[in-house]
Image (cartoon, rainbow over all chains, first blue to last red; front, side):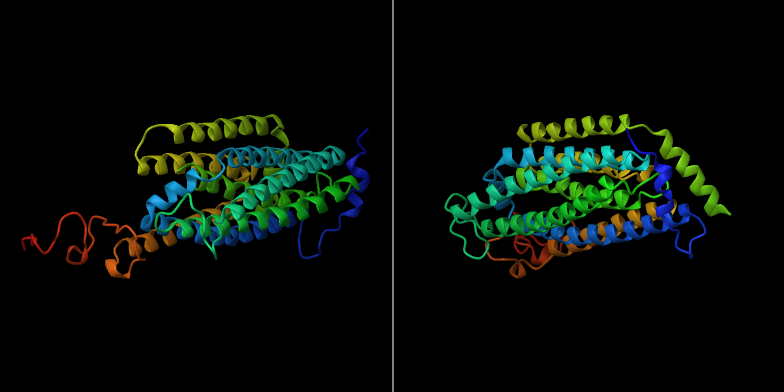
Length: 216
Length: 139
């Protein structure tokens, strides 16, 4: 049985400078979108670097992409998209007061995130062993000019992305715990929504990284 | 108060939308993912591959932003924030790429391919046609 949301609405205190809970929700959502805009521009800087150096060394980028593990990249894409679905569903259920369902969905999302990191770690390990290190490049399979640069960009973009996955996992864990404590209701679900937005952004970045690094 | 009315309207809308639509978006995202995987295997030129991959990624990103991130039903201010950030990403891409594509070749990294975009300074280009051998006729 799902406990009724009404019993917990008393726990939500509207800050006095907001006229209604809706106005409060609008404000926190706007704040989150402003933060996401800074994140988008942060990653865009790395994407610009990718295109500038792809312009200088097209062959290195084509060869480099062919020597990344395409199956690992594709699997990770499917994993992140699936975790985005479960987070979107968690938001939906938290909004309708079904905290327990939302909690389980967040747990599934967290597990997907962990699998993503493990696969990424295995990929990194292989590339380290093969000598595709940005600071000491000894990879014998890709030796065209600019090859080291491709792997530098690969490690920087996926590394920054993996850092975001780690932060996202922390946020999702915190929200999951609160879901299991039955803290959210139709009136108050902002943490689930904002944490979800962050996780979707992580997915969004990977949607562009996957084809650029692994496919073309 | 407009704030009240807007909030009320939006709340009703999100209540109406069921969980089913997330699954529809998910299936579309999976189809596009395997689509981009398949397109990458087609025999096409490198710029075409890049364009196709970016187009499919943009479609996927649009689905995620509109439905998973609820921008479709978001307040105008949130949409503005997102669109302005995308606009500035465009500004950054445009000016940096135009700049690096038109540089004097000796300033480019060693062993790099010189990019010659139309409109580049022909005097300094070392592209396929040698500007010193065949001077451009003046107007």
